[in-house]
Image (cartoon, rainbow, N blue to C red):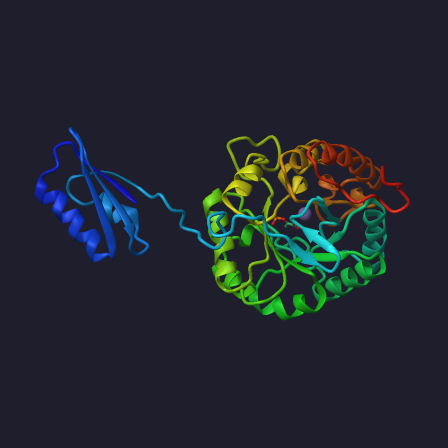
Length: 345
Ligand code: PEP
Ligand code: MN
């Protein structure tokens, strides 16, 4: 921490700040310039910088270390790779996760699983417990939905990612899914974060619609501090002053997360935009920006989808997107798995 004293700060004020910092366990390096006295405080306990800012004679306080540790690049320089069966998230391959917004029936999941597997996806997405804005909207099929996801994934050699909404559901999720998703609305549900921190299954952590990058990394830190270091960060759009699309896709979050953290980064252009015509360009941008995985909603009959039909790609759109994404991946030294029946170029 660096503390800049006011130009007119008295010796007593400087000494009072030093005493306070020493009490907090810091070593102090004092430098007295012509205009300002600057104190460098090293070590010590985690403090609320405002407590120091409020001391008499203090002009500014700057934190130089990040408040998250385990999630930071300084803790671990090399990128984290998460291996689930034969899929590696955070490696050279950009892993495609695709499927419906919500599980509607066994037939629906089977059909969509086949479409996305054929297109080259490695992970089947689908909600069985849905966080809906209205209590009157469809809330999900529950355990039955998880069962269908598992059966479809096993049939088409896919992994399963699905959203867990509360700690009591975790044992059920451990039984059926490969990756537990924490939704945007639950990104700061600290109780839930702590609980998924105790398990040994990967967690896909979505950035909250109003969460800063630092808050998102601190949410990851909650999970990691419990012992579970297999966290995938996911940019899914944030709320800004613009209302044209469902959210504003913060593409810059991808390289920023990757600079600040060693964790793999996913992007969800479906929830970020809310419209299927805007999903492909942003999916392409996300791969170009360095995303390690994409989460895309796909539906064989989006007009009759129970949830988020407007942002779900039609099967042929998904196939076409995968073709384009492979070209982009190659241009940025990455790769995307060939679809079934597609000859690798
Ligand atoms: C979802 O992926 O199904 C979902 C609800 O997304 P988000 O939490 O990003 O809104
Ligand atoms: Mn959805």
